[in-house]
View (cartoon, rainbow, N blue to C red):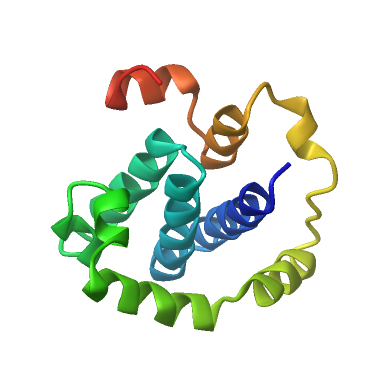
Length: 137
């Protein structure tokens, strides 16, 4: 599994834990990080789903200014915002946070057909639902 997919999985786990604790602003920050990693990993439907979840919670969120995460990632204003979140939740901090939740990635990725199916399962959505919302992969 690629390092980016590992990192994306950590942020998706933290987003889910934050949502369960009703800490939606924290969830949105983790979803931003996961969305950017998904876009960089050629998982545009995962990135789009993360973006959609953020906008559903906060229609005026900065990510809503762009039609996709990929477009946002090329804008200096968004990059500045992203760097701020990355400094707050660097990979090492995210790993520690995951450990405090009693979660370990281990070999869970191996149970899935591909990276998109794995990420979708962490988001609690099926690939069929992604197809319905964002078209075929």
